[in-house]
Image 1: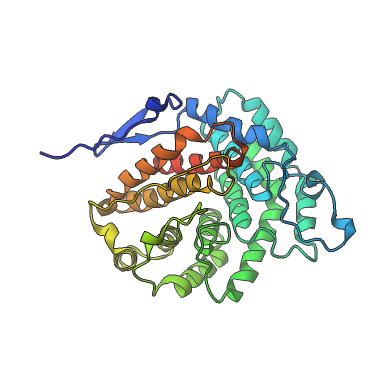
Image 2: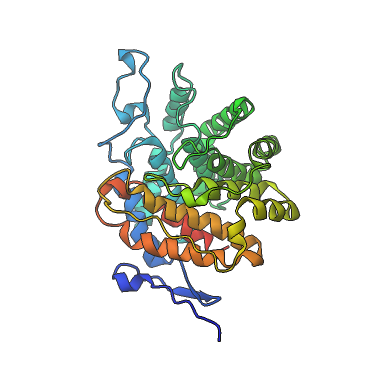
Length: 361
């Protein structure tokens, strides 16, 4: 008799009312209108919240000391630049999927105000500053291209307006990738912002959806250079105490994109051999204190692991067992992210939405 795995679902926590879709004995989390309304409140609350703010700025002189909204009129809220960018992505993604959002009018107004031609021109000017050539490399760059991709694939007049307004910054970020990647001799294999594999994955998605062949070719070449000969990734060392990305699984995600099917399967069987087993287990990252801005990163690692594992499971039926791990990771963290703690609330909604979207593929 086959074992039926029952995954504890969100309603048991009293905070998640989404419906579940059964798949191979699993209750698959779904992004419903109810959950979309709940998650939309996170970026709406912080996208124009200027303080507290972590600028990550290099000062060239006293003239560079300005308020966050002066420096970054488009993306100044949500504590830091990259969180603001993917907060905007969250609202675009939710509105695109659920035009009937309770706060749709407010979402539209904020998007049009923030992603204006004038504001994006100021962002471009900042990035072109003498001391800002590596600003937000590559995590913020990746999310900017993810925002541009979301707009590009949305057939709506609002999306065309915002995409056109954003285009100068999008083009600059593409140019930065093309300049940087040939100079990167070694990949950055960490569980936080500079992770090379994560940055390549989101940039690949943008290039793929927009037909940017030059960028795709560059990413494929560098991914092969960096990762093709890797094997036996030490996933038992993960997660680190403040990781929000999995170095091993993010690497698998970019190779899933760039390698043909047979080549990926051969590579993956050597890179993460334990994952070949249908009994493979991977425990979610445990958060001990969600008021600690670093420790709460582990909720992020649960969401990012989930979407990467779903990408593999969605592509190859023989890896469908990885979806169970994705479900367990999302179930652990999703009930806790709307908890009033700004340390996680300013960014985790985006990760939750992206993870939930991965169950739809």
